[in-house]
Length: 171
Image 1 (cartoon, rainbow, N blue to C red):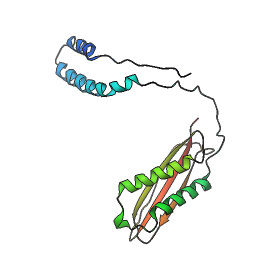
Image 2 (cartoon, rainbow, N blue to C red):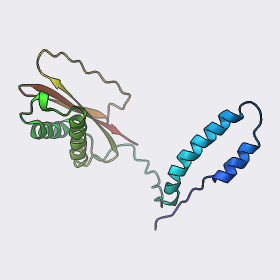
Image 3 (cartoon, rainbow, N blue to C red):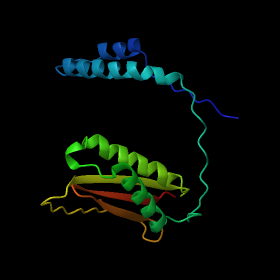
Image 4 (tube, rainbow, N blue to C red):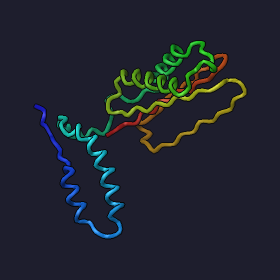
């Protein structure tokens, strides 16, 4: 049975009473901060009535049941990039929306592989193939025993696209 947890936020009248007790030269600054915070609090007031699920207690599992497989993820990246890009020309690409669409599609397909307790991070970059020189560098602190990454570079006559997926085990 799900436990319902409700949070309460101070009402505007309570905040106004607290504001009236303030004194000194910082009063206009504090009033401006209060008004800006009450506007955001009013927009978040709709979330007060949401029901939240009870959090699952920790399992203290220190190793994954299925480790991140570079070969499986690389084939997923390859199939998504080849299917979506095909013979697309660089001049016809919609820019950032294409990179976001590709990244979302790759992430969705990788999650279907069932790497439980892994945080999946996907990046996609593309550009024109002619006279281009690009270097990609990434740094991260992780456990080399469980965490890994896979990448695939797709090229056609007018563009290149690099898809990278990081699998970081979350204890």
